[in-house]
Image (cartoon, rainbow, N blue to C red; front, side, top):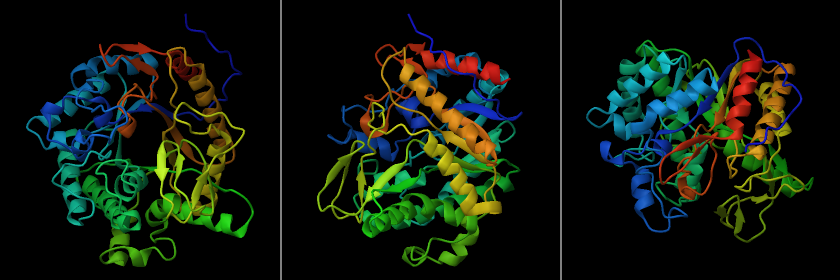
Amino acid sequence: MIRRMVTNPMPQFPAGFLWGVSTSAHQIEGAADAREPSVWDVFTAEPGRVKDGSTAAVACDSYHRYPEDVALLAGLGVDAYRFSVSWPRVDSPGGLDFYDSLVDALCAAGVRPVVTLFHWDLPVALDWLERDTASRFADHVSVVAERLGDRVAKWITLNEPAEHTLLGHALGVHAPGRRLMFDALPVAHHQLLAHGLAVRALRAAGAGDIGIANSHGPTWAASEKPEDRQAAEFYDLLLNRLFSDPLLIGRYPEGIGELMPGDVEADLKVIAEPIDWYGINYYAPTRVGAPQGAEIEFGGLSLPAELPFTVREIEDRPVTDFGWPVVPEALTELLTGFAERYGDRLPPVLITENGCSYEGVDDQERIAYLDGHIRALHRAVEAGVDVRGYFVWSLLDNFEWAEGYARRFGLVHTDFETLERTPKASYAWLRDLLRAQR
């Protein structure tokens, strides 16, 4: 029997506030034989890359079972569903037919499609170290927009270029598995350039309501010591401002632009193409101090000693099954800080991901997490931040990248043997919250 946790009534969000859930193609679709390979297929085929040795060849099999998933969305009562189109699938014969059918099913169910155009599954023939990949991405965007643009409510160009750069190209723990350290900076620049070119391609196709999904979180210095504060400032620049300053104010943080390839000033004019809203994926703040001269394990990552900072534990906080600290008030801090930093340059904000990994169908910890973070979001709205929507990560338990199937972020439990979907307690809790908001 599922217990129901009683909480104080949730404050009301403004009329028109958008409620949704998010997924990504590689993590849920499966049907790997019905698309071209991606860098993630190559990566997961290498022994030792994924902790449980699994692949996403089947995942949740949403390619074949999407009608079930649309029914779950309708039962949940969300306004919108954020999903990604697989670039390798779009490049395959009939690949867009699947997304055409999915979008039709969502519209018929009264759920607005929100499409992410790149969520890490790069075709194997392409490389973000190469400038041409940005142009190739714009071509891909044009193809998708021409087919789906008449029904898509919102567009997201890229998902988390910071993580794709850091984890995939600097530290080598995600696909394509490179360990380039600071030589990975061109990957960041080319993704940002791809974003700007994609915005132009979408506008040319008549599409509107365009944003990006960047990951952000407050950076806290481990102490007031100058060396710890300096390390925290550098980390914040690398994981936050490197990906928001060019988009919102048209320039890189001081000292970064000269490290980027090509005609950076000309590229920045493309990168800073106006967008309609700014998406933020938030999970936790990060406590950072000066280097300690030894490789450390943190949040499932092995961080090399040569980095000019170390990530420290945030003490006296509960943690998720992934080991991430649960700090809802840091979301309020993040949003009010963004509004203060960028002022009128910051467009309306959407929380495009927020969620947590916990085991079990009676997932009271997830309910508490979501409750706390939604209340923290409301406090940011009360403080004057123009937040227009909130998307939970994720609808389904899925393939969690290098963790394989060991982490469960879903509102719906997936049995990876039978592929049966079972709504969790958090699904019912969110359904009831959305009803109350309306």
